[in-house]
Amino acid sequence: MTGVDEGVTEPALRRLVVVTGASSGIGLAAATALARRGDRLALVGRDPARLRAAGEQVHEAGGVKPELFRADFAVLDDVRRLAEKLRAGYDHIDVLANNAGAIVLTPVTTIDGFELSIQANHLAPFLLSNLLHDRVGRIVNTASGAHRSGALDPDDFNAPLRRYRSLRAYGTSKQANILFTAEAARRWPEVESYCFHPGVVRTRFAADSRLVAWGMRIAPLLRTPEQGADTLLWLAETDARQLVDGAYYANRRRRRPLPKAADPQLAARLWEASSKAVGLI
Image (tube, rainbow, N blue to C red):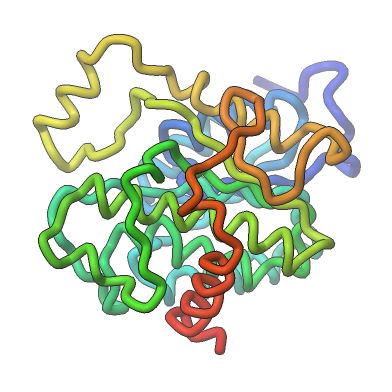
């Protein structure tokens, strides 16, 4: 493309959307669609080559080059540096899409001392959101129906490392996403906060396992990344008067998570424990 399509919002009026996990899958699909609709994008990814390729795709879709930020959410110092760069670069972020995440097939402890699923999927976006919340208008967290298998204990984030089960660890981190969203709505009334279940999507998820990656390629009825990103896009753009702050959505409809992901006392405990874990208190 040589320029912006006719009818696209003027640059001064474009919203700024930060998308984490933007190198592939749901994040890249969402970023591409948002760029096509006229938003400015800041893309966050772990792998430099895939991040550059994503940037080129988003540029082609919207006609404006996105800013690229490399960060590994398995390293909390990377998250802190990312927040510093975003604060230095932008006075206001219209939407922060906390989409980065992973399912971890074997027990892994990060350099920060936490089970990798809970750090990459919850503690890292929790830290990023806290470091940016005074500049963010809306937060959209990618959660999951897998919260059903969660067994969150805010007093012991490393409990999944004992008798490790990857789906249990992943579900626990997704349970945390939903609780964090609701608690953010209570603590930050000036920031709109939502989360959603994207469905089971054919992406690079669990690509470290050849068997799982093969299964993801051949399994029937999986959603495309574009289909998985649909509710993210809807939550990023819909008038707040039509949404419920702190709520959990799927297929553009409000859903009721299981009680263990809707307990306000557990959400408050999680917030305090997470704040201590990432060094905010």
